[in-house]
Image 1: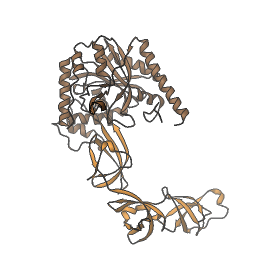
Image 2: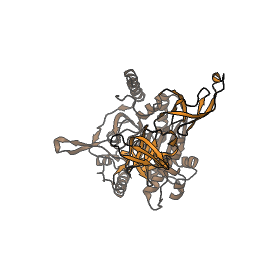
Image 3: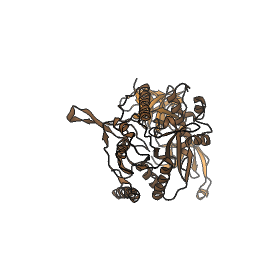
Image 4: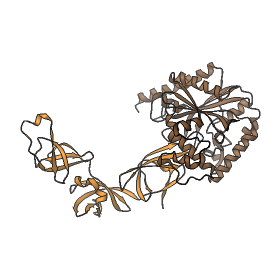
Length: 189
Length: 313
């Protein structure tokens, strides 16, 4: 089994911690004067998204995780599966709700997503930072209210709900920031 | 970094070196240069030296890049140099991070007739001159653990030390029989609970270390054996390490041999003892010496977030 020694630690490295694949986010080399050196590491658990902290003595090693970020096209979802296709090989994989998580509301067919594969199984999905989605439901904006800069909720075609300006109407296409879940602008497309 | 920024950084670095030299020249210390590569590595169990390969000699090891100029400078002191200082490059394999570089600049000086307390005063004067006046705080190593980690490090059991650590720093199976693990727990506590509190809006001298961490310092018999060693911290960062220098060759040899046994236990290569150093120690004058990290000093004085001042882009 491949492993990494502390002197190979760097951010982005994928390692196994307590049987879960994790990504090193920050690695701090620490050595008190005349004392032992160690690495204080912040890791993101790639399955749960939680941040972990660990300390390793210099020279200790940690098992490598067979984790790969791949750009794939979202195809469709059924029941509890979201299907993605590798546009180069046409290979298809399905991700479960644990992997997709809250990002399910940003997945639109044909959009390119980053799929994190662990031993060839998707464990996390990152939608594009910006997606264009159609408004399927929102209250009509009140006339004359546009100058007030008020907002209202709008439900999008994927089920996502975002705050939008009052002038937005049903059927509009909106550009949305998926990281913050925020309206950016109306879109033409 | 733009070329204007680089030029600024280079000038700042050159100015700092000039101010350091002025400080010591005015005080009558002699500037010296000693070999960066010597035939001996150090026994310190946690220090690794780069070896210098000689291609002309079938790729044999021609020497080791020195982690500090201490041995060579002590040979000069023993030969009657009087008080001396040196600004040189030092090398520590495997040490790389925001506050560590494998190659860095060290200011090291020795004061004949001083003990570690007098030398602390001089370090404070130097820092005040370079960084502007800062209040000086002094706290013993032992007291710092009581104050900041609520534990007496001299008597506490390993389990109790372990319990004082933040979760992410704990050792899974503390073992009371293992001496090196006790040291490890103390180091982890120092780094996580003590150091962040030191040198906050002041300069803090941590002094009187446990005998097991004496390195090349004298040990005094007080209520517990205390090493005449100090470290200076500013903004939580260790800047300097100083000793009231041990001049008992037999005791120094025992410590080096102890280091080597620990190296063996931890599966590291043993290191040949620095005989030129050991054989000069009995002629060493009473003196105190300190090594100060110039890159770290620069980092603090410029507020930079890493040690790259004056480096090529």
